Each structure stands twice: as C-alpha cells, then as structure tokens.
Image (cartoon, rainbow, N blue to C red; front, side, top):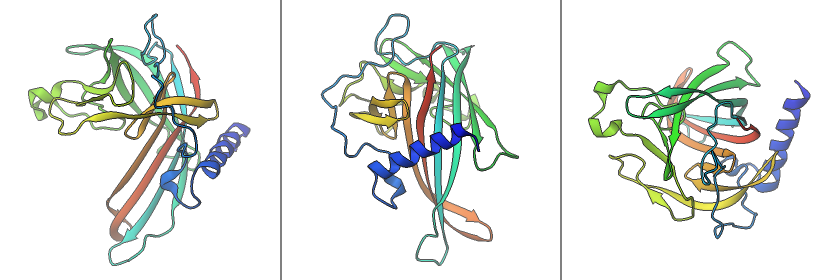
Length: 251
C-alpha cells in the first residue's frame, strides 16, 4: 500500500475518532463538536469573475476518499451481522463540453478505484453533466445525482425532462426549492458548517447528504437500508457511504 493511501486512511481514521461516537458509523466525520456557521453566507467558488458559482472550468479535478460500510441481517435473524468496511478513491474531472437538446453542459468523468479490491470490476467509470447560471446549479435528468440510470425520452413525461436543481444562489441557510417540476418534497440549505478534511477545515452548505463549499462538493454521506440477497440467504442490507474531499485542482 502506498504512502499516499496510508496517509489518507490515517487522516480519515483520526477524523472519525475525534468527531463521532465509538462504533457508530452513521455519524462518522460530521463536525458535531464544531461551532456553527449558520450566520455566514457562503460563496461558492468564483467562475469568470462571478461569485457564488460552482467550479466547472474544464480540467477541474476533485479526489475523494470513500468509506463504504455495509452489514446484513438475514431473514429470521433478530440482529445485523458485523459491519464490513471497504475503501475507495473517487476522482471526478470536468472533462468536456456537452451540447444537450436544450442547454449546454460540462460533462465530468467519474472514476472509482478500490483500495481493497484492485480487480476485476474496478476502476468503475461514470459521468455527470452539470451547468449553472446566476441563480442555480443544475444537472441533466440522466444524472440528477451520482449513479442514476439514464432513462430514454419515451420513459419520461415531458415535465420530468426538465433539469434537476442541485443548489441555488446565493447560498444561505433556509434557502429551499423543488429539485424538479414533479417533486413532492423540497431541498433545503440546512446549515452552513465547517467540514474537516485533509485540506483543512472548509465551510460548506449542507443540503441533505451533500456539503457544498468554495471548491465544490466537500463531502457526501448516503445511508441506505433495503432488501438484499447475500448468498445464500435473503434479508436486509444496510449501507453507509461517506465521501470526503482529499484534493482539489482548479481548471
């Protein structure tokens, strides 16, 4: 294992030890003891002289350390089994301009490398298409968030083909919006708070499980519980994915 990987994992381990209750992976990494910054209006990184914008210049690169924790409870069992931890590196790069049917986007290439499973399925590559204007950051409906499956146009009613709004500008606590025309719930900037990374403590706006800072997404946290099959039995699978920014290179 390289010195770089050891350093990343050591930093992540120290972070979890300092900020989360022992044995509780759901609360790994949040700045639970840090002072709140709710009174601060956060400026997303400047682009072309305009404040409050996500960094989307071609060549911009983000690298994340990803900790995936899973556990399984078989049908008939009362308790979950032990947590299994897997480490990944996620690298995203603003790679090219993409001309869509209605709007132009920046398309990013996303590559996952597994520290624990160097082959055969990794690296895994996906893409995201983003654009922004003076009022919001948007993704196309084929992404709407990392890892979504691309639908065909005939699968979608016309209103759903509108963009997905990820973030609104200016970014401040209490800002809220419908992410898509048919959404029944809203997204809200819940807090502006510090997030500790190997790059330092970065102020970030928390929207659900995503923290947006001046350098883009600083952290993502996803918690999923659902039915699963883990050979040889059916049951319930719980998964917690935590992505923390480890490097940022502007385009």
